[in-house]
Length: 138
Image 1 (cartoon, rainbow, N blue to C red):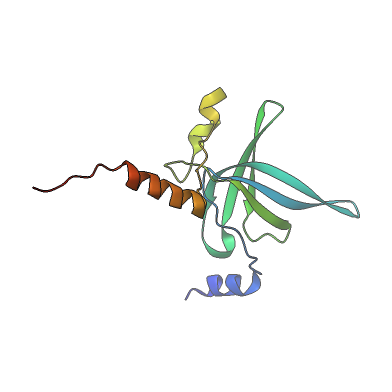
Image 2 (spheres, rainbow, N blue to C red; image 1 turned 30 degrees about the vertical axis):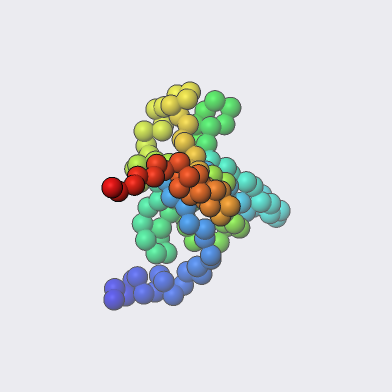
């Protein structure tokens, strides 16, 4: 194993991070120090990309604030990240969605992945079975 990677992995404290990918809308609670005070600021936006592996990995979040697009890169295992919440899971076909930077209006939106509960899945299966035509062999 590479000595630099070994030392890097030993020194970084890895927190539990939720599974998210490009296209997901997340909220990052980030600690900010102002003088001797410390506060937590929420940054909510769409994940543009995830980059790297291990201790040096990072992710980019984009949001529109007062009509201006703002992107911020967060190191995944930064000690300043208090928590990460996944608000919505988006449906995208790319790992890096840079095209969202130039999209305006409705084209700038990302479709939300629909999640079904156990009851809804059972009801959908029952409806599908009832709707299927019965064919008798002669």
